[in-house]
Every structure is written in structure tokens, then in C-alpha cells.
Amino acid sequence: MFIVNPSTLYIVATPIGDMNDITLRAKQVLASVDCIAAEDTRHSGRLLNALQIQKPMISLHDHNEQERALQLCTRLQQGQSIALISDAGTPLISDPGYKLVQLLQQAHIAIVPIPGACAAITALCASGLPTDRFVFEGFLPAKSTARQHALLPLKEETRTLIFYEAPHRLLDTLADLCLVFGATRRATVARELTKHYETIYAQTLGELSQHFIQTPTELKGEVVLMVHGYRKEVTADVTEQATRAFHVLAAHFPVKQAVQLAAEISGESKNKIYAWAVTLHK
Image (tube, rainbow, N blue to C red; front, side, top):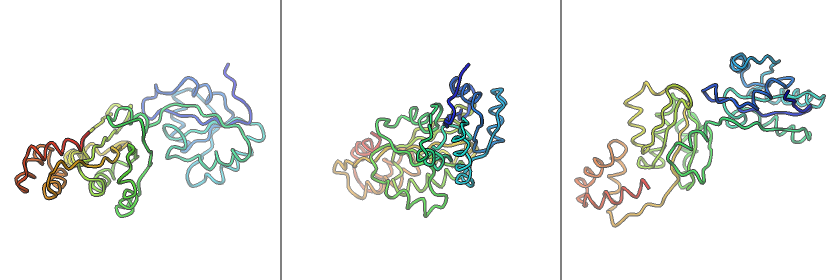
């Protein structure tokens, strides 16, 4: 029989969609601890029922974490073993738990991470964007002005950027990304990961914006939004008028059509603009 250690907090990753992604070790820990701290006990109760695990549960979410952290610390000091889970994925990654872990570190209480699903990493590995260096930014502000202010310092970040986003804000966020980063920046939207309607779209920010404007039925489910890091543009002697026209047009048209229109507007060579535009997608 699997045995957990007393006076130990286990941080347990749970599936982000497909229940089969639960690890054997996670199941063993959840079935063996004295208590489970969950972001939403009703939501996590369905997972535990599916796993045929019955354990006392206590809620730990953004609004009660300070109070619950003290209670859980006391229980751990008394010798209990406790598992921390979130609604889905790895706890503390844009989910509650930081205050608890910080308190337990200060109290010298053992903390054991049980690895498993994480939406950010799951999405990144299938994004087609560079994976050697990346930065996780979590959720952006809900209001457009605050969101743009948050994006401005990231405009020249060279690492791949990873965001979580709510489906009802995706269009507005893509619009702000186009405004701040430029519509031609490569990006990937991954939604409903590991679920029946999983979709992963890798295009430019402008093309992604147009796609979701045209298919509003897909503005559902959990979303991971990833953006290619900043690359200094190679102008290749393309006029400023041509580059400016292309950036505006690329937010509304496919690359080849944007090149054609930019050439007609600026009088620049279509081939020269296209050769320059290709460098933006590398």
C-alpha cells in the first residue's frame, strides 16, 4: 500500500480535461492523505468520485487563502498529511496556493510536488513557437487600457510569451496584441486542450483575430495564447510607406494579399515587400 508522510503537504497536479491524464502517483497520494485542500470542493468532488476516492475536503481559494493557510499549517504541525489540488492542472500556476506554500516554507514543513498536467506546457509543446526560452505571464488584465499597459513592456521580449485567457475576452486581447505587437507577429491559440473539441491554431495575430471574428462559436473553453518573441525587423530597403501599409493590411488580409495591396499603395516592388514580410514569420 502507498504510504504518505505525516506533516507533509503534497501539491498534486490533476487533469486539465481528459481524466485519463491523472498519474498513478497522484491517485495514490489523493487516496492516502488525511485531507484534500481544493480550490472548488464541488468541482474537485467530481474528480474524486470518478477516481473512487473519498476524503475530507477543505476549500482554499483566492478569497480565503490567508485564513486557510494558517488552519492547514496547524493541521500539518499536528501530524496530518494534506494534498493541495486546483480545479485543473498544476496548483499555484495562475491558481491559489502561493501564500500557503510560503507559510509552510517559513514553518519548515515538508512540501512534495506531484507533477502532472499543466495547460501552459501542454500548449507550448504543440505551438510551433520556440520552446527553448519562454516566459509565462498568466492572465492579462480584463480591461483594454490596463491590458495594453501590461503588454507594452513585453513588446520587445525575445522569449516566447504564454498567456491564459478567458474565451469571452480572446477577441479583445488579440486586438490589443495586434495594436501593441503588430498584426504580423506569429502566435498560437490552443483551446479545450485534451478535450473532445481541442483545437490549436498557429497563424499571425492578425489572422487569428480574423479567424475568431468569423467563427464566434469557437470562443468557448479554456484558452492558452502564445506569442512569438520579438525579432528585429530586416527592412531589406523596403520603404517606410510600404512597411506601414503592410502592417495595417496584414491585420485584415492574408500575407500575400496584404503584400499585393501594400505594393499598389506604395509603388514598392511586390517581390521586395514579400521577401521582407517573410522575415517577419521566421
